[in-house]
Amino acid sequence: MNDEPARVAVRARRPLRQVRHDAALAPFIVIWEATRACPLACLHCRAEARPQRHPAELTTAEAREMMSQVAAFGRPAPLFVITGGDPFQRPDLFDLVRQAVRLGLAPAVSPSVTSAVTPAALGRLHEAGAKAVSLSLDGASAHTHDGFRGIDGVFRQTFHAWQAAKQAGLRVQINTTVAKNNLDELPQMARLVRDHGASLWSLFFLVPTGRARRLEGLTAREAEDVLHFAYDLGSAIPIKTTEAHHFRRVMIQRHVLEQRGIDHMRALGMGRLYRSLRKQAVGAGLMRDTRVRRPPLDVNAARGFVFVSHTGDVYPSGFLPLLAGNVRDHPLTDIYRTSSVFNWLRDPDRLGGRCGACEFRTVCGGSRSRAYALTGDPMASDPWCAYTPGSFPYESDLAALGLIR
Image (cartoon, rainbow, N blue to C red):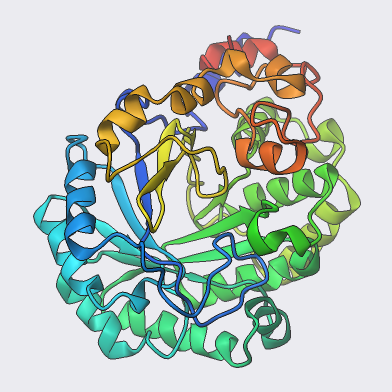
């Protein structure tokens, strides 16, 4: 069979987005954990948040200096996300957002849905210069979501905050933790995201750190099914994944198969979970091609991504506790560019196991956070990846895309 027409078609549209600058010199995104204080008791909390603020948190002056270090990466400025705990537990939050804007950053805030997240507070956040907020939705019902969050009534409050944020002029991203207990509710959550409107739906694939060590994770086969389901939804809902870097592999595989006119369920052997989720989504009218799929961005821990803790410690990711330095002692720019931890993680040739042998390793690389959490080795195979290296048969198409080496 002559596969030249297929290769030409594959070249026509790239399935991934690339960072426009050298990811070894500047991150695409900086996450700052402003505080670990939070009144909620979420089952999956990475930070193991507590009601009171930590006395060693970055002060207002130190936080301003840290943001200056973020701005020092230059243009385009990294995305800057203020998270927690609950950032609204810091009384200087609005002043810090204003300072971030003065420095040329475009801050987004990721609050916990508590009594502090009022329409007035969201309006002040927008007036201070914040462009977006992210809210969590971890179930399609109050029973599931409130059980996840540890407090009754949060499900209802989330929708109130969602509407209030949009009315205030803020973009709303919805974050969903994907774990065993809410798999069957993903289609219903997708419908809520579609109906209530969000700029992005982010599916976070559980990493067993903090309190999340007590939650039951997915099998590799289940993760694969969810990723293909997420691909299907991408034609109706703007969607991304967090700590599921193999979504990039799935995007490439599905792109190639579509260009060749090959049925993915037959070619890739989709599982029972995928078929069930897809059936529910079809019934909910979610499988309509109403938008162009959002290509995932080629970013991973230490490679386009950096996390600054509430005390100024710098990590490749909030889920990968390998300390690289502290912004109180060294500029963030130096830590990101010269830290042995960061440079080590940025080298795909250091990957081990199946990830090291995989033809997709330079565009995927697997979750280094999950590998570390489950094996103790940050360069080991991602335990939630079911792909067998070399098993995708259309290598010429991958070569035409310039995505393997």
